[in-house]
View 1 (cartoon, rainbow, N blue to C red):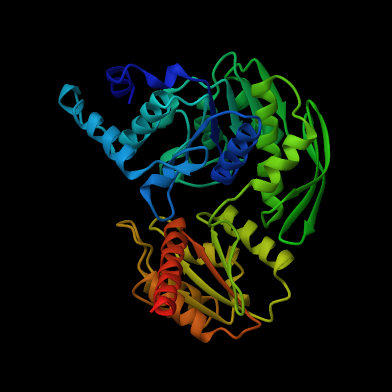
View 2 (view 1 turned 30 degrees about the horizontal axis):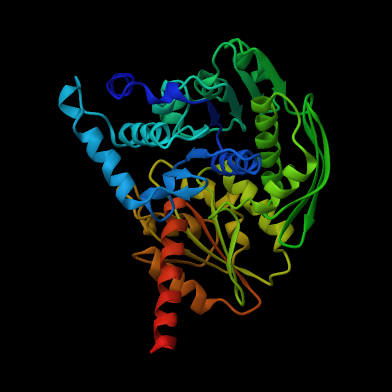
Length: 409
C-alpha cells in the first residue's frame, strides 16, 4: 500500500485526515463526524466500508457517493500503475488508494477515513491522521487481529500517530496503556473527558445531553435508533472538537445531529409489519441490536428474524446474542458473498436453540417469506452481515420500483 501511495504521489499526505477504528460503530461515527464537519462549511471526503448496495458508497464527498464516471476514471488511472509495482495490490488497497486520489484531486478540505480491519496494518494507515477515534474494543476477526481484547486493542492502536489527538471511546482501564504507548499528544477518555449526560428515547431517535472537553450540549436530537448510536455521535463530536481545537456552536451541533443518517443500522424500512434492517456482524453488535430492539420496538407482539452471516462466525453464539429464541420464526439466508455461511447451517443452529427455522436460497426469498408470514402487529428484523442488509435494501427498492412502474402504466 505504501508503494502504491508513493506511485500516486502520496495523495493522503495532501489533506488532513481523521481516522476511525473500533470493533463496532465505525461507519455511523464516520457519517456523524462528516456531517459535523459539513455543517461547519467544509468540503468533506468520507471513506467507509463495507458498502450496502453500490461500490460507490465507499467513497463520498459531501456524503454523496462518487459518480460512476469519476470512479471509473480513478480506477483506470490506478490500473496503469500496477505494472510498476512489485506485487499486485489487493482489492481493498485499490479502493483505499482510489479514495485518497479522488479526495486529493477534488480537492476536499478534510478526509474522514474508516479503517477496514484492525488498524496498524490496514491499508488506510498510510495516512498520518491528526485525530484518531477508537469507538470500542470487542472480540472480532480473532483469526487475524488476536484472540484477546488486549491484542485487538494493540492492532487498533496502530492508527494513533505521535502528535495526534486520540479520542478513546473504549472504557476498560486495562486497555488504556495499550493506547498511551503510541504517544498521542492528547488522550481524551470516555467517562473522564467526555460523557453522555442523558440518552433518552424519542420519537424516531434519541434525545441527548453531551459533555465534551470543550463544553456541553443539551437537548440534541439524533434521528437514529439505539442507545449505542448516542455514543457514536459523542465520539464524532469530540473528534470534531479535536480537529477544530475547540467547541462547536450549539446550533451547528443540533443542525448536524438532526441531519445524520446511517443506512442499514436499525433502519426502519417498512410498517405493518414493522420492518427493521440492522447489520450486526459480531456478538457485541448482535447484543446491541437485541437491546435496541427490545427498548425501542418492544411494542411489537412478536418477531420474525431474517439472518445470514459470513463464515467464521459462531452461528449459535450470534443467534443467542440476537435473542433468536424469542422470535416466532427464524428465516436464514446466505449473504451475497463468497464467504457466506450456508443458510442451512445457520438454520440448524437456530433449531438447536429451540427456534422454528427455515433456510432460503437468497436474501430476497428470505425477506419475501418473512413478510408474508409476519402479522401486521409483528416486527421483522433483518440482521447479521451487512451484505444481507444491503441485499434486503436492494430487494425492497426493486419492489417499490416495480410498484411505481405499475402505477405509471
